[in-house]
Length: 634
Image (cartoon, rainbow, N blue to C red; front, side, top):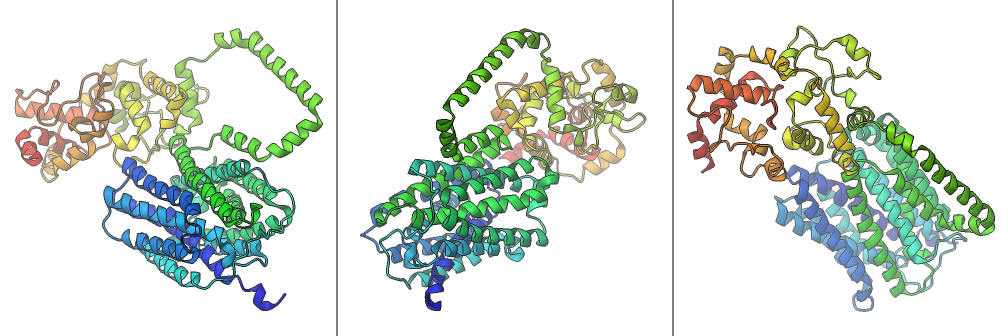
């Protein structure tokens, strides 16, 4: 083999690297950071990212219709140009409309780029050791994306670098080789077939990868152990590069089935390790191993391993693969992680059966009698266990409150919340009467708590209604701006959320509400708080802490409108049941301040015990001046 032939595919290596860099550092990372900087989140973010998926799926599936009508070089250059324009446009101000439009362009350009590149990859990479060259291109992309200065750059810098690389890609695409019509894969057996099984395996891998990526990205403890720090980024880049090169070798020697199975095992191990934050550094090794192994195969399969010499067939395979596995698989993974905040073991088990279905089928065919006998015995044992012990289990089933206590323990709530009001301290004003530490120690297990990042929960059943607790578990930041507490909406999908609410409601119910308010009744408006409040903007504070329930268009008011025991009063119109406007001004100001500070026992109105007195007074003063609020609203 001549040296010129050995290095003839360098343009293809660069084109693969540029395409992956654009997707990884910009479309999957920098663009999301840019949207966050623009204040775009929630449903608006979902719409914008959905537009990208729509564009990507559409052009991926249309790829085959352009064969013979639109030269592949021009198609690839158009894809690079669209990606470059999309990146530059993100520097401009973004809102829902402009963000969705740019996102649609990025997705459409990426779909056109990726399908065209893999369908006609031998134009640029050739047929000499193509799998190893693909591995080099993918590995270089991951290595460059983990370069600390790029990984930690601003969204604008990421956009400009990505656009510049796309322009380089336009120039590289112009120089092509003669296209081979034959499928030149030299990989040995073990390739998966039929296509639906390959599609299912790739979809499961992308699904698993996207879910793990989202969980890490949105968990500070996991993120700090996997992606933060220069040393960690260099490590990730090195592992990615070595794994990608290894994937090229493995595909060539052992085939697609072995490569994807290895990728799945590594990703499954990483997901298991990510359950505990202290194991994140170890997961940071297995995760890039699995990702790089399947990423190389994702490029190589349509180009060289699909077993077809037809360009049209390769285009159809690439379009369907990237539309379903790439775009839909990624969206499903992020959606699962966003709603469940974890990767269910059942999903990993199902994916395992898919990956190892061929081996399992061969084993079943060879051991039919043993497998059937074992299955029958296990089924009989399960039925017997249900019949013999179901009555005892019903009699000893824990109550809803006991179930909620177990959820409280299993979710690690003791790491941020205490159940111990310290005597002779300000705790008694905020949280209720002092607790007996001996009573707490006698519990099994004791739940005094490790730290108090959040409020004490000893009397939470008297201080918060079931509705407030339910809304807070589902979206803490919606009720308490800036709250570091994660959302626990996923607990309500299987009843654990309602059990946790029942347990919270049980805390403090053995005491009289009057005991809770003894120390609170001693609280008075101090002269210093009144003086300091005059320098604060009560309108801003009301908007921040109270508008979600008390403003006509408040988020919590709209979501839970039919669930309130009494609809919260409007800031201006009222009705103010507990502090009517007819009261003397000083008395009404004191009542309003006390309600804001400690809430209304037995109602859905919570207290804001954690706020300083001057902010509480400023909000109370603002409510007593409705004409000011009215003028502001107009």
